[in-house]
Amino acid sequence: MAQHTFGTKQQIQFASDNDFFEALGFLSKNDGTTSIHWEHNENQGAWGSEGRIHCYKNIASFPAYFSNAFSAGVNNIVHRINCNEYIEYLATNHAVQLGHNQNVTAILATIPAVNIADFNRGLTL
Image (cartoon, rainbow, N blue to C red; front, side, top):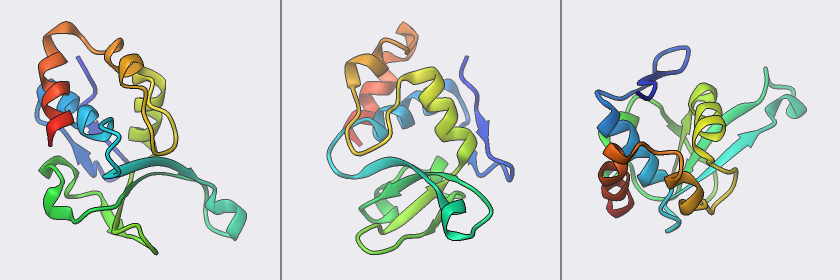
């Protein structure tokens, strides 16, 4: 069973493992929709580092479970999804890498067989 709630404000919430693994597929599709980052904002005088998903397309194309986590983007980043806990969880438990490209084969190896279809559905969103 995957963790379903992330963030100090519980800004990312999944109703089920199905949604969690669909989201993982969505973030893994390597089509330029998203990229995963750890921004070192403390180097610029801010509170600390931030785990972020950079979103390069409009919110309307994103699944609803991310809707409470959006913040404004900068430059070519339309929106950002901010959640240190979620980024750490994905990297630690599901082979998610920082940057634009994900190793789908490595991520698939971390997913229970019962949730492979959910992950594959996310790849098509």
